[in-house]
Image (tube, rainbow, N blue to C red; front, side, top):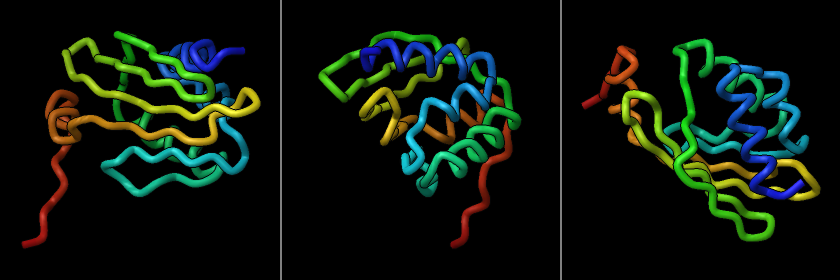
Length: 121
């Protein structure tokens, strides 16, 4: 399976909120770092993070572009509301070993009607 094909499987499982299928795409020692939060390290921690996030609000990932270079793939995505972001994947032996997500967290919260985090001054 190519990196692009694995990313497409990721998007399908994500859009179906299929935590089990999503989690199985990761290596046991994988890291998922959505840069607005602390990294989730290990398949079990990633599964818990995905479960929490996908239960919080329904999300839909619409693929805009997938760029592939060997074990690396970049996914440009948008949501139906127009919110956009990018996920960078490193894939080795058919498993995600690293994922970094970049998006505007405050716009995401606003578009989904979620509370803004409190800020300590």
